[in-house]
Image (cartoon, rainbow, N blue to C red; front, side, top):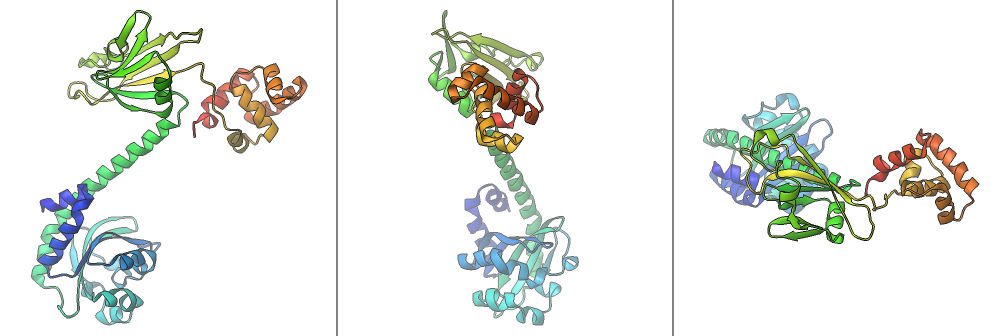
Length: 368
């Protein structure tokens, strides 16, 4: 039983678990299947005893022809095991294309189905099959699978929840990669656990940052200081009252460039149970010297700008004045003004500062 939980969390364990399950009831094949009974879409999530070619063809065409899954009203509720004979007459199975082209070539006839879960028209089931020569499954076989099925269901739920959380984490990380501001997540001891693309670029290219065994640090006129000591000590505290605090500072740079702006907020986790390497704070890094990266093609799709208007809008988003835009694009000042009027109309703005905010902070400013 413990093997089900292991397999649901580690996909490499599935073949051995399904092989042992087959052996326990003298079956030749075993699979976890998912069927959308409304659309006919089907797949074998995990299987043993089924050739890869047949597994692929099940998803492509034969799953929707499975004769035992043609009448949803006959299926038992989740957690219950039933035989193929209870769902469909043997004569109908033998006459089906599914049997002649998919099951018979693999010498699979007698089936057990354990319903794992249902969600709307989608049914997931444990499908166990063996040859006609071995005969129908015995009552003892059905009783054994009935005892095992609850553990498989719980394991699958745990595995599904873990995979969903992992996939959601990947999607969230990808979304952060697109933001036009640097974002870094630091641990209680100040180690960087995650940094989006812009944060990585800033930290790599700016000499005011350094990285060491004790996490990210800043090179200030007064000397080197760790980020955890300079910016976020209250946030990394285990005192509950510090959770909602926000820390902010400006970091001066050489060469007359405007300073970087850093803002840190506490992570939404319980500081009393937080481990040293758990996320503790989120640090936002702004670089006023970094020009906006606005794609003119995106402006055309988002706002219906012409190609000429989009080229002007891109330069305005970088903070250029009208005369600078004209010089950059080789246009007259009046032509740029005419384009600007059209841009105002199409973006529902009426001031240049408002336009720049719209272009830089809206979808057009994402770093795709």
